[in-house]
Length: 353
Ligand code: CIZ
Ligand code: SF4
Image (cartoon, rainbow, N blue to C red; front, top):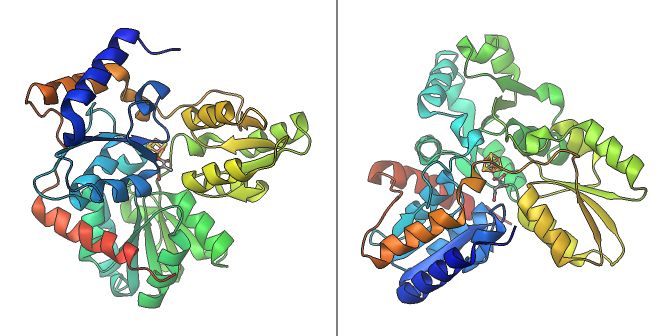
């Protein structure tokens, strides 16, 4: 649906009044009505770097989800303020790993005498608390584009990895890119005592996968892949590594959001693509490439409901409050957590290759 013209005019006016004081970041999974006001678009990793590269912007308005705004706060200067237009824009995957649960898991590994051999690795899609835990314990943050490099590094530091919070990215990277087997991986369920695993399973495992997943990417099934191959002969199936292992295995290509965008841009005219990722992005790619046949991998419509919390009314409100001299919905990470999270983020940036 086209955006409300009154709100468009108000957002335009507010941005003009704020000028270079404000920088608006838009994640690829955001609504069109919000993306039109983004100064830059990107995935969580690119946006974190963009925020860090704008030390002159007093206000960073982050159109994305909570953990991304936290990373922006960690990577920007102390005087910059990061604003999330709707505080209800969380991430169900990030919420699946809570600090107390991860500390309890670590205690279990410590009691078994294996914590010393275990390197914690967390996906970017996790809270600042979890990144801080990982930084305190000698680990690293990773994204969907450098997960293999992060795991290579981690296995040089220890013989085991505790991978947080996305089981699918962890499993897909370990099995499809590192040559580990499914039997090398165990699934740690934070809602069960000892993770629902025996001491022997924990001792034997190379990858301890946290039982988290993305509610959007985790919905694609093997059936969705089979269906689209039947409906569209010759279709290329391209999915994000947050998809289930059997979906990734049945696909033709797998990669991060930025990789998906670049692949579609480079695809020949007339080619057909079924994309296993968030729907706002798939619809924009289809509109931008009318010479290619671009479709959503599933028949059911599926947005990220928390990404969609950021809508034009919330963006207008946040911008107009800034014009009035009020900072609303500021996201801050306490100094101690930020310090250790930064250690884990810097370790990621220092990965070789
Ligand atoms: O699923 C997500 O939220 C992703 C892929 C985020 C990102 O940009 O890394
Ligand atoms: Fe979280 Fe998935 Fe939404 Fe990304 S798409 S913000 S991982 S729930």
